[in-house]
Image (cartoon, rainbow, N blue to C red):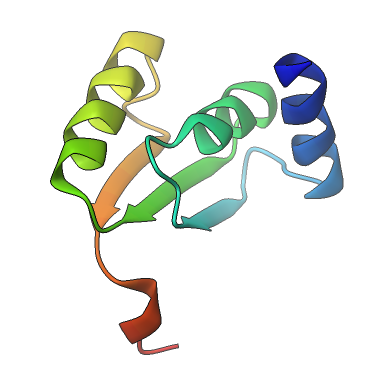
Length: 81
């Protein structure tokens, strides 16, 4: 079920290797990691929680996606765009 969802998300986004994707409120960044893995796109996950940053970065490293995925801390309600 999750695999189908991740494939559908990558397809819906038409994600390609040259794309840069920002995932707001990403939690631990599971969807972003999978989209990066499936498409080769670069994904940045934005979350407010320290534990989600630490856990997300751990999962990125474990998946070998350090060059394509990043977790950043911030409040998406206060973004300048």
